[in-house]
Image (tube, rainbow, N blue to C red; front, side, top):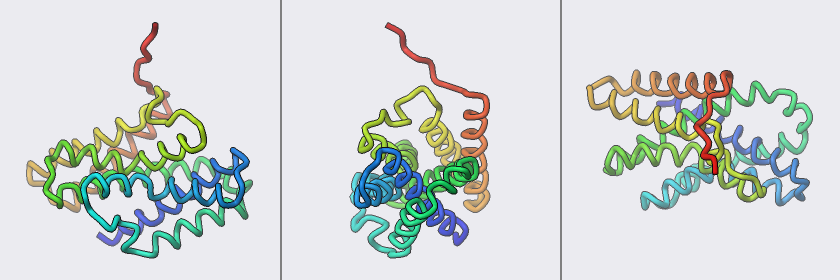
Length: 201
């Protein structure tokens, strides 16, 4: 699906910008900023492919991903202040990117013949592990380990995709419904500050 590929590479650039901005916030040097941007953009897909034994990993087979990551890092370096003013816009792109990464990761895992439950987990890994690695590198607690609902949206969306596939829904409509579900779930969770319960001592 060409639209999925387009959103995938656009999401890769947005993730690279997100990572590079995090590096700037930590006052890293140019190499550090570029490295954090790169890790954020391809971390999830790389972890997924390594776990699935699919090598060379995805971004190594298509140089457009490296081009988009480079563009994202340069945008954050040259227009960092402007980008920060557009955080709401980038949140939308980031959310759509997470949804698409979930679907693409899930589809790849299913194509390789793994159990649907494992495929759902691989979809989540694709979407959130780049950000988790970014946070660890920047000495922050990863977002997926905080109370905010984040990875759960990907798992729920992945489960929906598998269920709709089992009942025979056309793949095109399945992808559209799943992406819309994840995006809506994520936006509602942020808007209404839905959180998972916190354990108390």
